[in-house]
Length: 241
Ligand code: PGA
View 1 (cartoon, rainbow, N blue to C red):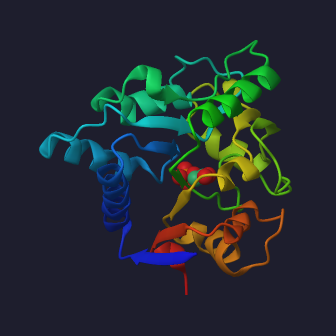
View 2 (view 1 turned 135 degrees about the vertical axis):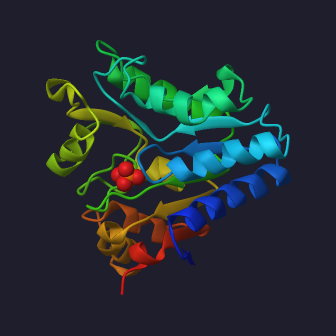
View 3 (view 1 turned 30 degrees about the vertical axis):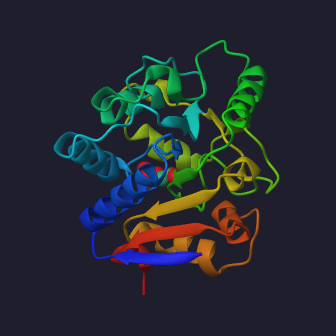
């Protein structure tokens, strides 16, 4: 794994956007794996800003998000569908038909949805560049500690820590999801390149375990050590001492 340390969150966000745009320049019909959460917000802002300023063309780009809450409708303000529209898709020219996010709507047959999602990635020819965050508990996408390294896209229970984090942004606390659909660890490792982003001192321990710890299901992001082309882009705080 290649470690890049940015001085702060702004620099990390700009560097992440630069890596994405370099990949797009090399391959206009790039397929991206995309994260949600706090960490990538600056990267999406930078991408939108540069898309406008540099008159970039994303019309051939295809995207697959890493995860979505289960039991949350697509139009719910806290769904990852809403997040992606607000942060990115509403502002660039990626055709809607090229945008993929698991559907976690109430009543969905999650097993069918997960199988469809894996097929869609396969039929697309795989993911060129997958961008992911890391949880303070070491999760990658919603592969919580204990997730099998050979796991595929599936419905999972969220950890108490993840539920508590999600709860901070849900106005209606009774609506905080307990489950999600996530790409599996093995699905993530099939991407041709991976960019892991981490910002803040609360991520330092998880980053250290991902980079230097044993590859273990107790620290799902450590599985990235098994991949030949991973960049870990962190800010000074997430790098730790
Ligand atoms: P965050 O989440 O960017 O909101 O910290 C990252 C993650 O949990 O994967």
